[in-house]
Image 1 (cartoon, rainbow over the protein chains, first blue to last red):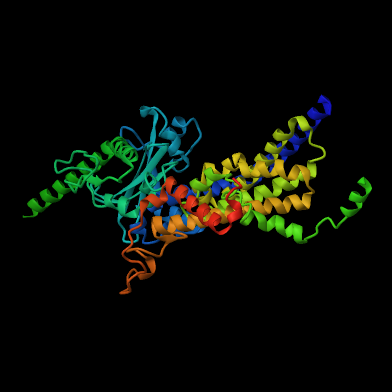
Image 2 (image 1 turned 120 degrees about the horizontal axis):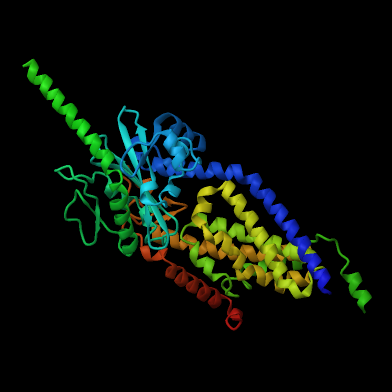
Amino acid sequence: MGNSSVIKFTLIMTVIVAFVLALLVSGLKPIHNVNESVYNKKGILSAVSEQLGKDVNALSNQEVQDIFANQITVQALNTEGKIVSDDEISSMTNGLAKTAADVDFALEAKKPEGERLLPLYTFKAKDGKDYNIMYVRGKGLWDEIWGYITLQPDWKTIAGEAFDHKGETPGLGAEIKDNKAWFSQFTGRKLYNEKGDFQSLEIVKGGVKQPDYQVDAISGATITGKGVQEMLQRGLKYYDPYIKSKFSNQMESDTVHQMMNDTIK
Amino acid sequence: MADIIEITEKEPAIAFGKEEKKLLTDPINENNPITVQVLGVCSALAVTTLLNKAIVMGIAVMLVTAFSNLFTSLLRNYIPKQIRMIVQLVIIAFLVTVVELFLKAYNYPIWKELSVFIGLIITNCIVMGRLEAFAMANKPWRSFLDGLGNGFGYAVILVIVAFIRELFGKGSLFNYKIIGPTAEYALNTSQIGWLHWYVPNNLMILAPAAMFVLGVLIWLQRTKYKKLVDIS
């Protein structure tokens, strides 16, 4: 066969294949987008599955959307711990997002520190309590890892957690997502010591000595474990100024109460 | 002479006789792509940690081998010899992308778990091996059956390996814990679970375990079918 017929064959084939694939990609795009956002939302809900009282993986798409519409609010913080207004959000994301709900926080985590936005999700439980969920992102052994940490209404104790990863080894690093016995260790651990200073968690081998601040490592997943520790120390630190401001509010209201009580006496 | 062959080949386009049946059943055992031809082992190690992953992967490969064989066979008289392999690769890549797009739309969590391994079907030796060895020289219907059979032979081994690995590695099947101390049907009841003393062995989840299981499978198969011993 001559060259011209080879080229003709190649061209026709390429055009047909490209056309069909382009059609499929654009046709299925809306479904892909819904799936992706539901998957991310389920990740967030996993961190409050205890408070929600439901198995998150068994929720339908509609139920996930409903919970997000009715029980979850999201605010964006900057790394100094200030809540960012909608106008600032659109200028910081170059108009990509108009409110905190549309911000792609995974993308934000890759920006330089000062320009970054962090999400703070607030989950309104059925019993009326507010649980705040923080988002952290770091590196495991092979690829990215990320997690959601839920705080008790006192802002000091962990109430729930969920981790996920892009490509950790099944049976080893992937246990951070799959092994409930491991990640549920985080529940009840403290992020602040008695003085009220930020003290993140350590992942230790060979037994936990300070049960409030340490978590037992996964054997065989040393680097993923270190990645989780680093991610928590660095990621949760960004929320520290905001949480501190909550502490001082609490303390102020406490002292006001006391003064009122004193005057009554 | 040539005329006679022409006449004998004139049969209905979609016949299903003895030979067609053999095309489907041969790859399951005597000519299995994994245990006998030892192709596609890489993905057999990677996706067999959970049964549902292995089943979805098996179906995906079945679709790709069947339809790439069909398309290649339809085009076999038009494909320029110089770019034969590239054309085959385009057909395979096209089908794999289609499968991946549909999987992402209709079973997102599994797509997420299989991650790169769906895309890597493109490099699976079974697919291109069948195109070169069969589809380039046979009619579409038979090529289709051959692809289906080989994909099925691959899927069967994947499911067997995944069954053993998930059962002993996690104590579960389809993510439902059935053996070991945390068996789900025995939780919150006074019942003692089946094999309640068994602690799931994490080694079974790691890639080397798939190698051991596969090795034992090949050994068992060859002990039973002596004629396979000297094939490869």
